[in-house]
Image: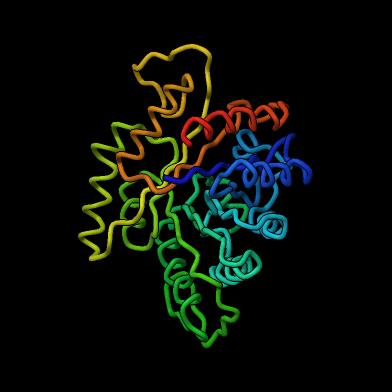
Length: 295
């Protein structure tokens, strides 16, 4: 099982110097991947959780690709309906080229209706749009010229070069039945965020296996993301979130995820209070302790 971390690309601690420091820390400490969130038009509901400044993940990861050598770089997750799929596919292919084949495209449908409204995208169609866009993106990466005639995107004879160095793995986020079916149909990995361990074991992963069988596809890898809250005291087992507690409790969580077949686990130290000005070095200290406990 490989460890990743989620970079805080928003709020008062999001500066070019800190973003660079996140990537260098991750690579120096032995993390396999860094990921970051996505919002295009932060409306008040988004701003309450993800305050500006908000750095675009594709632009930022392209910049960080030039400053790293082995680290994989990904989105957790890009809200796929916010951008034309031809643009997303081309930007992703370019980023994969610039990084030497290190890009991961994490995708989701998002949750903010006001942000959808600001971008002129129908919120109630976000699932169907995402599925159609994924078809376009997959075709874009596999062919020199493509056409589409769908409900939400239609075009003829679009040239696609350059191809990515490797076809970027698609990690599909979400825990709804639709998200699990989408992961089984399109995903190289399922990427749920802050799901409960018992739910993952007893419901989520069995549903993923059943959906993959129904789709006639291999079961995607399991690569979740969890918020990490390291405490000095033992946290009661009753309703304890995965990743919260002492170092021993967090290590036990990671061991259980490994037994469930987890390929990657992305650790997220983003604060509950979005305007928390704490220095990123505090996050680095927590992440380093966790990383050392599993090596």
